[in-house]
Length: 234
Image 1 (cartoon, rainbow, N blue to C red):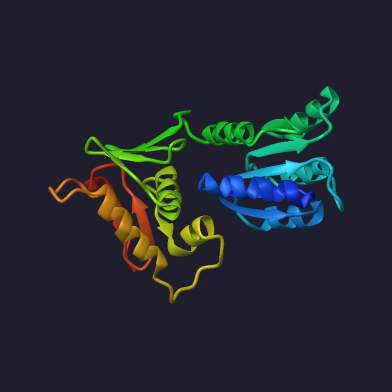
Image 2 (cartoon, rainbow, N blue to C red):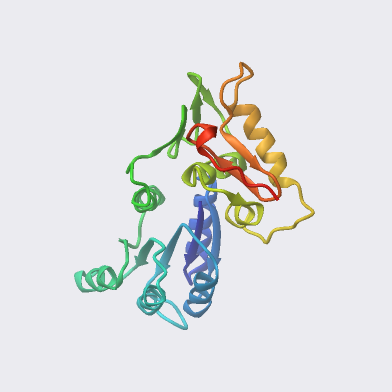
C-alpha cells in the first residue's frame, strides 16, 4: 500500500515514515502544504496522512482542494489542535478520520488500517483470493493449511495484487505502488519478485496458480476459473 505523509515536523514525519515502512507500507513524505497538494494531485496513493498546521497551505485547505478536484483517497487528519470545532471542520471537508497529537504509533497504524478497510467490501483485516489468505495485521499468508512468511517487498507486492484481484496491472503501475519510483522498462525486478511469490504461494501438486502473466502487459491475481477470464496479449 502506498501512503503519502504531509507533515512539516520532520521528526514526526520520520517517525511515521519509519514505523509505516516497518509495517510494510510504501511511504512518501511532503513537508509543506503546497508540495503535499501537488504531489497528491499528481500521484496515486492508497491513503494520505495530513497534518493540519502546515506552512504554505494548511491541512484544511489541502483537504478541501483535493476533494474539490475529485480525489477520493482516504485521508487521516493529524493535529495538535484537538478541539471539537477542528474535528468537525475536517470531517465536514471530507476527512475520513481525525487523530489528535500526541498519538501512539499503534493507534495511528490501527486507524490507517481502519480507513483502508473501508475500501474493501469485506471490511476485514484479511484478504482472500481463492484459497490464499493474506493477514494485513500479521503480514503472513496462508495456503494449503500452511503459514507463509513473506519479506517486506513480497508482502507489499502480494497485498497490492490481492487488493486488485482480477484486474490486469501493468508493470509500471505495480512499480509505482510497490517500489515508489518510475518504471524502468529494462528492469526485471517485478518478474523476479513474482517468481519468488509463486514459489512460496503455489504448490507443486498441480493446484491452480493464482498469479497470471499477461504477455506484454503485466500480471493479474485471478480469483475465478481461467475460462471466465479474457486473455490479453501484446
